[in-house]
Length: 142
View 1 (cartoon, rainbow, N blue to C red):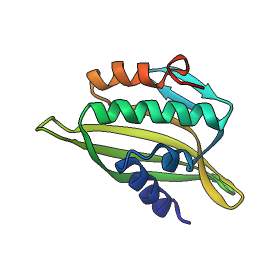
View 2: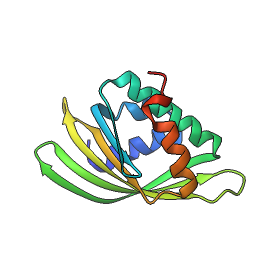
View 3: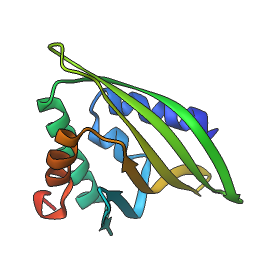
């Protein structure tokens, strides 16, 4: 699967707020940098719990759907790449959309692309504060 097709599939899971669908695009160990803070997950159950908590928060903020634009992809060697994605999240009840960028680190695992790390930036200040709380390992059930 091409990275463009991979991110379309990922976007579809994101638009459905499907934690398991999104997590199926991840591999562990997994790292995320949000607001300059590095967080890591060593196992899939805790990563899935954190993803579900974050998506529940998004739902509470009027998340309606996500669209994306693949800004840049750079091969880093056989089966390894980085990608920059611009996201727009539409929200219900006339709430303004969220617009942000995420940089992804990907590698092929058994022939399939998987995300092993990401860096999110350009988020709305309200989203930064609450999403950070939802994404913290202490907040997850795992």
